[in-house]
Length: 298
View 1 (cartoon, rainbow, N blue to C red):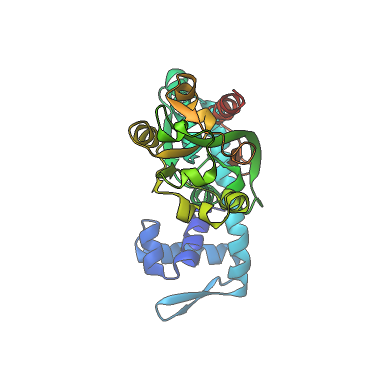
View 2: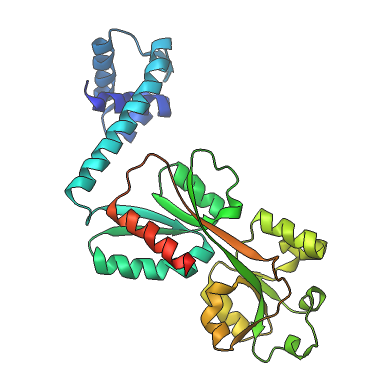
């Protein structure tokens, strides 16, 4: 069976009309109609009924749709595996990262891939965990590195935990808070607070620990997914930063940023690398997995 006809049939089912489906598969309407008719002749059964400008699947058509999608998915996977056999150095992959993994991993990852596989195309999407997981499920991304506490529905995902990292509130050297004998949560409320996206789990932890005033919708003055921008704002103002400590390790060791010790054992980030199960990993993806493990373990 010619799988092109199956693709034409699936397109017709998805778009509902011959006109829209023909545009999607880059055929004329008459050519698409001939392809569907040829498929019906091969199978010896009517697949669709025309109702005005739209189509309705017959019972046999409904059964075929389920199997056709399965066949096409297997064909795509077979082509992908064959491509990997021929050359692991070329091709294209799509990587998704949420803000904290982007700050910790992305630069190192791209530098190493540029050195090892200069002709490999890497499309990076930076976003919030739930958005990235939706793209992964839709097969628009090959792998994502995200906040594990924000993975609401793990079904159908291969999840590898990378690390749980401590966090705290930080301020610049010379900040007025450092003149206090001790800094508590109430003292933070006198200053702007910056942070990246906060998961529902962390928001709940903040409220349970410090009360309603700690909910991110009330606590955060500046929400920004760029840690570089956050770093500059905190270094040049009295803004307080809520962050995983590992991201600001260089500034902490240099004495430029000071952890305030407001949330020992309370604030932390948990991170995971996620992909769809049953997919063949290219050499580049295997290396990205290794890089992610090494980065977060370090």
